[in-house]
Length: 496
Image (cartoon, rainbow, N blue to C red; front, top):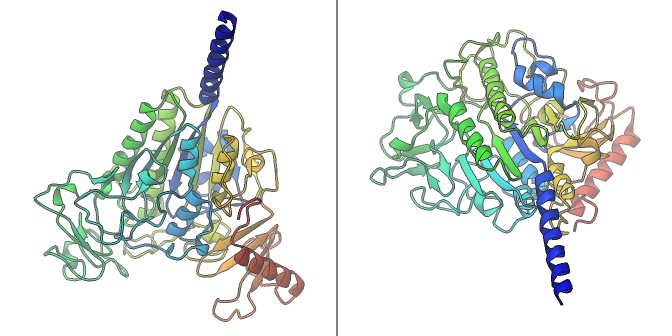
C-alpha cells in the first residue's frame, strides 16, 4: 500500500514538475503594433530621412519579412482579423468604427488572447483598441463592458478608439481613468453635446488645423471626430501618449516576468493627430510624420530594453508590425505632405492605407526569438491573421472547428524554416484581391476596371502594368478561387 501511495505521489510530483518546466519553456510573446506604418517607413526597410535604430536592431537580431501583410488596408478590420483569425470582410460591422461603437468581438469568441490564456499565459492589451466597447448606448461613466477582458485579456489600458476620435480618455479594465463623478462624460457622433468648442467654430484655438473631417470637439488643442463633453479630469494629453502607454506595458511585463505572458502593445503612433513629444519634435528630416516615426522607434526601444533588463530576451518572441499601410494627409493640416522631403512611405509599393494595391496591406513585419529563430530576411508570404492558429499550435491548443476560420499554422515560415509561406491570401480594402504566389488579382469594382486587374508582382512589384488582357486564364482562375473562398466561409483546414 505504501509503495502504491509512493508511486502515486511520485507520479503526481512528476506531473507537477513537467507542467512547471513546460510553462517555464513557453516563450513570452510581445506584439508591438504600429499604426499606419508603411513598408518604407523604417530605416531597415530603406528609409533615409528617418532613423529607427531600435527597430533596425530588432531586425538585425531577428527575421525581417518582405512579403508580410495586415489582413486589411484599414485598422478596425485588420485588428479584428488578427485577434479572431477571421477575414473581417466575412463579418458585417467590422468597418472603421466610430468611437462609441459597441464591442464587435463578443464574449465567448475564441481569440488570440483567449487561446494563449488557455495555454497558461498572462495577457494584456495596452494602447489603441478601436474594436468597440460595451453594448449599444453604453454609459461611459459606469462599468465599460464587454471589452478586452471578456475576450481573453487579463488586463487592459486603452485608447478606446483612435487618437482622433472622442472620447479622449483612457480606459483601464472596465473604467475611465481619473474620471470625476461630478463631471460625467457624454459622447455623441450624431449631434453636438455640451458647450465645448469645436474646430469648425473656433479654428483659432487649434494647435494645427484640420484638412478634412476632424472639425468637432477640441481636446488638447486638437479638434476630433465626434462630440464629447465632461470628463475634463480624465482627458488625455496627446504628447504624453508614448510615456503613458510604454510605462503601462512595461509594468505588466515586470508583474508577470516569472510566468509566460502575451503583451499586445498597440501604439497611437504614427496615426493622426501626430503630436510628437518635445523630445522628438523636429528630430527627423521629413517633418512631423517623420518625428512620430522616430518616437514610435523610441517606444519599441523602451519595450526591448525592459525585456533585456528582466532577463527575458532569449525566450521572448518580439514582433513588430503595422495595422495597414501609410497615409500622409489623413485629416489634419500638419505639414506632413509638404515636408516629406523625398521620403517614400510605402517604399517601392503602390498605394497605401485604404488602397487595394500592395502598399495597403504589405507592411513591415519583424520577428525576433533568439532561442529559436536565426536572423535573416524572408520572402515567405505571411499574414497577421495566422498568428492565432500558429501560436495555438505552438502551445498544443486544439482550436474548435468554428474558430479562427481563416488562420493557418505557418510556424515553419514564421520561424524561418519555410521560404514560401501561404499559398493564397485575400487582401481587403474597398474591394478584395487574391494573392497566389507572385500573381495578384483584384476583383472588379474599382472605377474603370470592369474586368478587374491582374499583376505579376515578380516582375512588377509596383503594380504599374495591368496584365489581365495578356493572361485572362490566370485572372479567371484566381477570380474563381476568390469566389470559392467567399462562399466557403472558411479557409483553414479543419474549420467549419
